[in-house]
Amino acid sequence: MSAGAATPLLSTLPTRALLGRLLTLRLSLIAGWAAGLIWLHWGLRIPMPLIPMATVLGLMGIFSLATGWRLRQAAPATHLEFTAHLLADLVAFAVLVFFSGGVTNPFVSLMLVPVVIAAVSLQSRWVWLLAGLATGLYALLLFFYQPLAMADPVAAYGMHLAGMGFSFLISAALIAFFVTRMQAALRTRDHELASLREKQLRDERILALGTQAALAAHELATPLATIQTTAHELAREFANDPDIGADCRLLEQQARACKDILTRLATRAQDSAPLALPLDTWLAAMIERWQLLRPDARVRTEWPADSRSFVPPDGFEQAVLNVLNNAADVSASPVEFQASVQDATLTLEISDRGPGFSRVQQAQAGRVLFSDKPGSGWGIGLALTHATLERAGGSLVLTERSGGGTCVRITIPWQDTP
Image 1 (cartoon, rainbow, N blue to C red):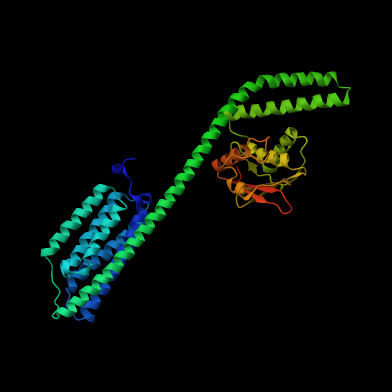
Image 2 (cartoon, rainbow, N blue to C red):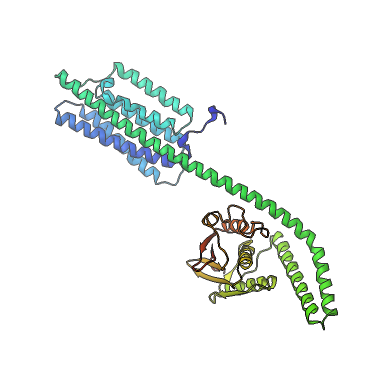
């Protein structure tokens, strides 16, 4: 990006938020001017033009009330509106300076505050507009202003020095305020950009995997049908052999299960609406299908009897099966599967007694491709599961189990489907 097209640093903040901060600053300046006016006129007995200055402060107060009401409305704020607010504040400040000594007023440098705010919030053309107006108003105040009636020049000089010091403190505070806000906005923007880049890279990998899976599913249909038919014929031929016959029947079941998976995949590709089932029925059917695919795995299940209709989000069942497979792969003990529903949220907990994950892996689970099964895992199961849950508004959290192992907690929003 070229320097001429650079984005203002605080433009990452919504314009409504900028208006809110400008309103806070305006109210602080109104309070400061009112306190100074009271101190000079009644405290130091310096005659001040109370009526015009109080009128300006009153108009600024009314404008502030209108701004507060505006911020409560749903209509979006624009940068042009924000610029108009800065122009109004600059003109009002110049009028107050006109009635209180012009450029001899030590607080005249605060006329730069709207320009500084514009420089970190708006595009360059608006910044130059405010800078030009501030320069023109300052030039006018060199020749046209209402001087303060002070008879003692020594006291006037002392007050001027005190005012300059106070003006310096205010300027330093304002600069610190906006610079810290600028840094916070930059950190937030960098964090959001990093998260978006990470999500984009993960989505690209998953999209590539999905494309390859669709092609593989199409090509696997024919050989799976051949395997199923051959296994069926072998099972009949060796029906009297307890070992070979059992293996052939198992092979036939596995081929049929793979074919069912391909059929469901083709059904989803046709955008067919998933079938609504009672929650407990869907959970039982899912565990049954998984046991068919993993007859060697043992599982202990626990879920409430819940007959409310449940329509699983696209890919949710496969996401749960991925976690179940991971748990079965690393644990010689039975996998524990628990389900519960609370506050319109379905929670699934899948626990194992495997070696577990490191803290770094727990923090990166689903976001970085890694495998805790060297030589036998591709590390994409958790990434696919995390992406599926994220798309459905859910989440996946890994925690350590007491006594060793890992507990994977899956949560997903759910309401009864009529």
